[in-house]
Length: 196
Image 1 (cartoon, rainbow, N blue to C red):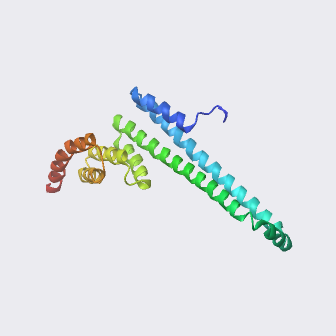
Image 2: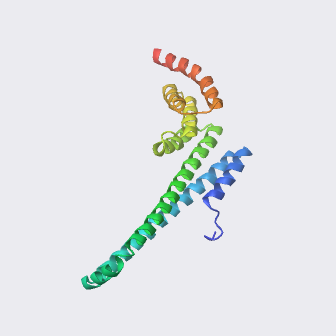
Image 3: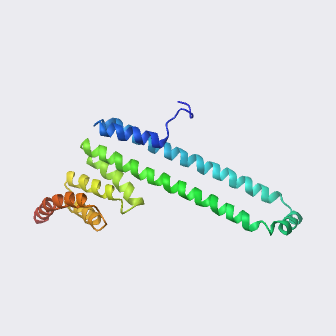
C-alpha cells in the first residue's frame, strides 16, 4: 500500500471503534494495532528528520566565520526577538502535536484492552492498560479495565488497588456505581485468599 493511500492512525482508530461496536473484537484489535504501529513509524520518521535538520544546522554554523557572525549580530539585534517568538510558537505547536499523538496512543491501547477483555484475554488487557498507566497514572478507563483484567486473573488485591485509585479521582456516578458493585465481591475474594 502506498503512503498516500495508507489510512491515518485516526482513521484506523475509527475503524477499530466501529468494529468494536459490531462485536468484531479481533478485527478491532488489528486496526488498533495498525494505528499504534503507524504512530510509532511516524515518531521514528520525525526523529530521523530532526536529527538530519540538527546535523544540517551544525554544518551551517561550522561554515560561518567569526567575521560573518559579527556582521550578522549587528544587523540581527533588532530582529532577534521576532525570531525567538517564532521559534517558541513553532515549539509550542510541536509540543501540542506530540501530546495529541501520545493521547491517541493511550486511547488506542485502552481500546485494545477492552477488546482483549471481551475475548477473555485479561493478561493482554492488563499489559495494554499498564502501558497506558505508565504514561498517565490517572487514566480512568485504563484503571477500570486493568481492574477488570486483574479480577479475571484472580488478582483481587491489585484489582482493588486500581479501583481505589479510580475512585480517588473525580468520576461520574455511573462509574462509582460500577466500582461499588465490583468492590464487595473483590474484598471477600481477597480476604479469602489471604486467609488460605
